[in-house]
Image (cartoon, rainbow, N blue to C red):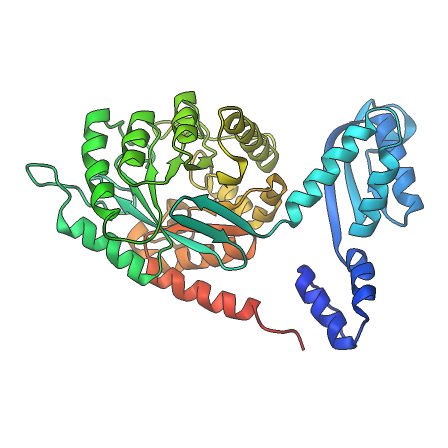
Length: 404
């Protein structure tokens, strides 16, 4: 006798095939084997009670506040409990109900569909990012003298052309397994000073121009300045990595014009202020709501939804506890239906746990990358590509093992 804890539909299918279940039977039974907990916030008391009765009739349940059952409370949060088959039947019933339950059914259906999505293809012209079962690695190239990670490669020649050290460094990252190269010219470490536009352009654009002729992976520009993004895209970049989450609407316009992919990150405050006592009423809810608004904003400016990547912003306006909670609950961001990027590499929260400097926290970085990918990350942004690649290769091998 075995008690199995299995989350992946393909593993459930594999067990049924091993047993010898008829293919049609697998199709019918699979939704019954995929269970979910779905939380809804601030649902009207009437709607919550109707959902509870309907779900009970299907063999599931809905947890609501006690006062919602007695009628003393007008609104309540809800925790829906059931398998996918029960949720699908519930949606059919809710579409026929009044009190705004038709909209609730649509929201629930969309959330479950997004959550189950596991394969993304991002068309970048001459490149296609296929973000499926195997996670991608983004190698960070910091063209700054003050990188928090201690790996800043400042273009110090008189004519400001990129030194061979920077180009060699990026090429080595690709050889070590980087699927994307991310070039940045302004440090985002806590307390970092802003870099003038002219300086940031001089630090990044020549590197991107040179790399675009030498490497065969997509190049990303790490910037919050629309003009830097524009010139980077003119010279070979195909992704815009904006740590401010498109706060400057012009950035969305630039990305849309060039049909570039965008990485939208959550940050509370700015690099100068973000670590001064960051607080949240509900951490994950607030980040998801923020990212959802930014996804809609990006689409309103003409950015293809299929070219949007989300980043919960570990280390950006977050305490140690916040960062750990994001890693632990990372799979919840799948509800947005977009691939998740995580950047934990050499960040101070790892050093705090291990009592080590950023440069000494390699093993801590590797463990956070493995955890992130296990919990749903499709891209990890790192400084130590070779080591992370090895760890993810082992994780991938374990994930592909057939269950006996």
